[in-house]
Image (cartoon, rainbow, N blue to C red; front, side, top):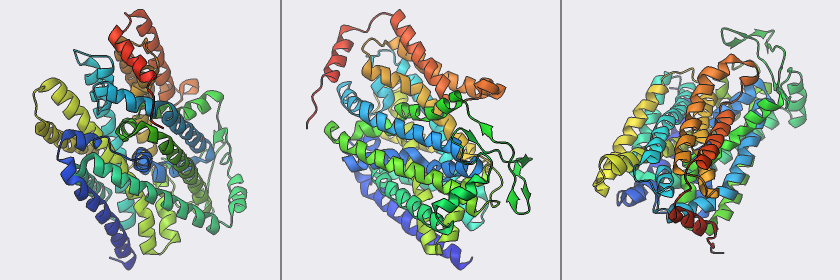
Length: 521
């Protein structure tokens, strides 16, 4: 093994050691109760809440998926996605965070999203709870798989070891760490990992601009690629069997593809997904005081704005510096790794690339933990074994975590998986299943239980229908599935709620209490 690889290993071992130390630090508290294990006893401070929410949300997608899209086809899709996510981040913190923190506490002190929705409608037969838990299990298996793909690509690129082995090694580490420390360890390490990701993006961006001769040089060179800097379209790499063609050392591009208003709207609709993201919503529920969410919102929005646009610029700069180094859509997601290993001494490069590891761990531990809680707390304790002790629920959480990780690892076995595409499907699933009903539940008193059930099924189902059956038709319907699915879910909730009996007086009074709740200054 070369000296460079040894230094990579040293740097990442130091980082992994810090993460493991955090896990063991919280192990005792996590094992005290399922409440501590799954939501940390609602004890998070504003900084940890903000950074943990964003780090767990962005995952390896931020350092690999988004730069990869920008590298592959230019500014258009990447920048509109980033704008949509930034708007969604701010609006979610502004409107949803405080109301959900209060409502989840008032509605039976719910500690999971399915719990909250079920308690919100005072369910006897736990239909909402079951549907919500099942959708969470399905989409988080896909989401966790995207994280395992990211860590597999990272390690196989760095060390030249077969992808599958590296992916499985990363998956095992994440499972062991989350198994031990639970929500508090996940949140504390996410805070650290959010900082690592931010610094890594900043370093690579700054050195990339320097290596390229300044932003003006980047812009001039990028203009030579047809459609690469087009806000209303994307560049179109010339492909043969999925590989971009090269002539005289220059990658070839065809005619750029123009974006119509509907495509831009559907790309911006990435922001709608935030209203249904369990890993973000759970952080809102876990903060110790609703009044501290204002500070969290500011921290999260600034972090998100800088990180998203840094990631897009890294992809653009990477194409200028290494135009023919990555010639498939899948391999383009390694541009951050290529730039880091080329710019820095191996030890520093290892620390910078720990940002990818940070992003992967901070997301996959959240996904596994929420999926585990969905089954153990909502299905096992809520339906199958209502007399289960807290210790039994905790044990079931950990067993479910392992099963979900195994399924995710099986999905991630395909080395050619494109992280951006895997994440976009899971993001659409959560956004359309939970986003509309979360907004209606928090802000419309007239929404009914039947409307909620119909809306969740319609939204989640439409994601599959649009992705697998409608979008392949091409033309005007070739748009991101989140947008049509979100709209359909909203319409179904509205129509079915108006056609069914009003919620009980008790439910309406609870809604009014939460709406008029006075927060501490």
